[in-house]
Amino acid sequence: MSLDERIITQAILEGYFEKFKSSLDLDVAIVGGGPSGLTAARLLAADGFNVALFERKLSLGGGMWGGGMTFNIIVVQEESVHLLTDVGIPVAHYKDNYYTADAVAATTTLASAACLAGAKVFNCMSVEDVVLREQDGVKRVTGIVINSSPVEMAGLHVDPVVLGSKYLIEATGHAVEVLQTLVRKNDVRLNTPSGKIEGEQSMWAEVAETNTVINTREIFPGLYVAGMAANASYGSYRMGPIFGGMLLSGEKVAADIAAKLRG
Ligand code: 48H
Ligand code: FE2
Image (cartoon, rainbow, N blue to C red; front, side, top):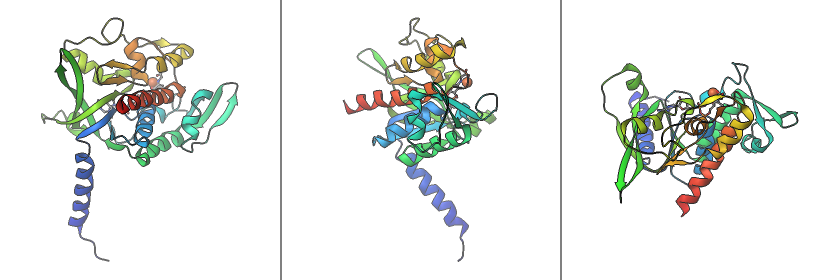
């Protein structure tokens, strides 16, 4: 069978722009493809919402590929095991409340499950800002400002484009990048004790894991924090290579936003 390279180009262009165009008015935009963002993407897409996830890197998975210190096994607690087994990831009981999974199997399967559930994934795409609107004196995030990662990495002066979203999930991990930008550029107060980003504290896994779920909240109108970004925003601890809190945070943010969207 003959192959026409122009048709290959055409197939890519039409497929990509169909995906892009259907993301102009999102229910939920998720920034960051780590375990919390991927879990939220899967659950919201499975609920039928128009969801897109933006990941700066080529590969999804964030900090989960390498387990602990590149020893690529992850540990999770019992309460979160269903978020792995529901998508077919094999989980082994280690002892007591400790379970393990292969980090690569877990990462690739969470990513695959999010895509197959209908979440639109834009990898190699960086979120560099948010869209703000003010109504009755209240400012709200109503969209995201995105740019191609290679543009960002090369430092090219190329302007971004904008997509609308009813809700934004900040799941960028330790750096809390999107929220940092919001606070740096605007005179806004967050739903935190100081009104600012509180900053992450040192290692205390037990408290950190509980707090990750508690801190998964709407921190600014239209903007939820999830995963490590939730802990960094609310000033909690880090937990090292235990990932149950990240998965449960993704589950919580999906449930909270789904409830809001359903009214
Ligand atoms: C697009 C962006 C942008 C941007 C960043 O760090 P992650 O894995 O996020 P979480 O919160 O789901 O998981 C945290 C976990 O991996 C971890 O680090 C733990 C448990 N640490 C404990 C400890 O003690 O250290 O993924 C965030 C993703 C990454 O893939 C980034 O590339 C991406 O977000 N990202 N994508 N636009 N502006 N900023
Ligand atoms: Fe980390």
